[in-house]
Image (cartoon, rainbow, N blue to C red; front, side, top):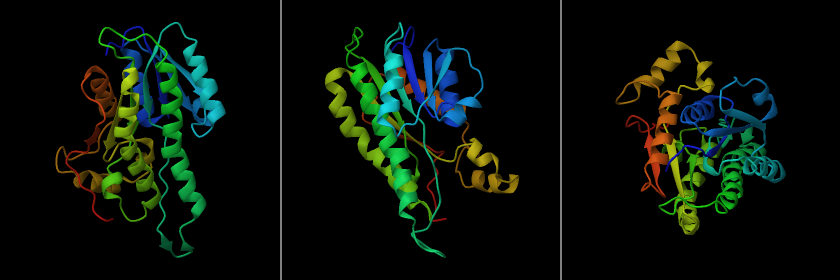
Length: 252
């Protein structure tokens, strides 16, 4: 799919994987709209070609309003990349008793329901655009995790939310095929994001040592590179792609 003269939405676009993706798409001449929470948008770097829209992905009203603004641009919406997410850690039974249900519910709400909210609302807009010469209207790329397959101790909520995204991918691709919209998911391994920046060098080195090859953490711009590859490769559809250096997570 040709990115020239198109618009894209990137959720969680103010930092980490989302910021790297927004930067990469803007470098390809895409008019990028980065959705993120207000405090994140306030601290986001200025990037040519990127417009920040304060948006809570769990809010139907906010997502509809922001996507309506994107739809008013002078270029068609063709790409959506869902990067917004949270990663709490809590055992099902811990020192304080059973897993906090609110923590579990909020993780599902942000990671899975938030992804679906943006996917469905944006797809309805993309479906109204004119197709290209091959009948394609757009591509939606979601972010899961290898925790969807090998969730570690303390990752019940996170793994469940990401497993839901993996399960969503194929039926979403089948549902949206009629409109020429592809759906794929990336399942990253250990990413060198701000979430891990607070860890000590020793901890970071230990995480990298567990990766078979290349024996390092994955950089956010490598995630963005895979995003642009999926967009460019029109026959990739309904697929979840692991990006993990052959890592298979141990229980802890």
